[in-house]
Length: 352
Image (cartoon, rainbow, N blue to C red):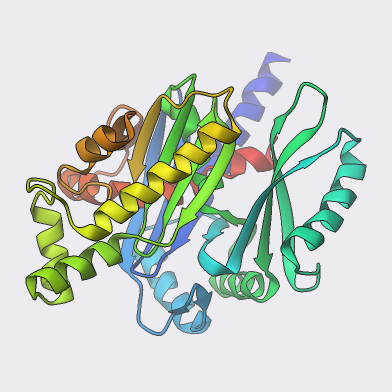
């Protein structure tokens, strides 16, 4: 019996190493293969590359064959050996709603959610792929659910990409669900928030003991901050991006308007969470994403919101098994890799 359990564990470990997390963003594409070890996440394969022009249009893949050729080269050059892939979708092509449903058997819940989703989202099953995640079960047995609807044509574009790459699709999900999967390794047995500041949007995810409670997307991101700096200082976009990365934007009396607006939107979202989920007290915020390492931003956000803020970095919770990548570079790009890493951990759900 013990031998069988050891064999199962070896097979399980092998399976988790063979899943590629693919995060296609407006500015960059991130790929990773990871495995969960005791108390940490080990990064075994990693690649980040600029998103080629003519690939994305408002979140939709419009150059699938060109992208497949680009990714095939990257996978080969970085010695990825995964056979399955998980990717994430975001933006206007994804619709999320939090709803409550009465207590009922799982089979009945699936059918009822499908009908309720069409009513809430106003998209039919033919127009969108609809899924849900149970966020919480109330004392009376009723459920709090996160509805997720992704337009069917976008799903088809991703599946076409996976087929061209010769990879089996393990799943297509939202970024908050991928980030939530990292919570086990944050060693937080309380209510906390992950704020992912992307290129065009900022995703807020609140979790309690690893269970996703609340999500909100703000239509502001690193691009808006860079454009604000470029306009204010009469710089090109590239010059403003470099200025943003190398200067503390919070030393003056007031940071840029766009940063104040973003901070206000974050505050209002978290305030709404506290009103709706008064039984949970938010105790910590983790920052991820390309603009999460803005000099002084963690301290500014902590001062404005009144909750401890920490920018997630390579170290206590994650470590690299990559001898061929400069550690300083890895530390620099790590905040952008977290969605990809969370996606690569999707194998755990498949094996539940």
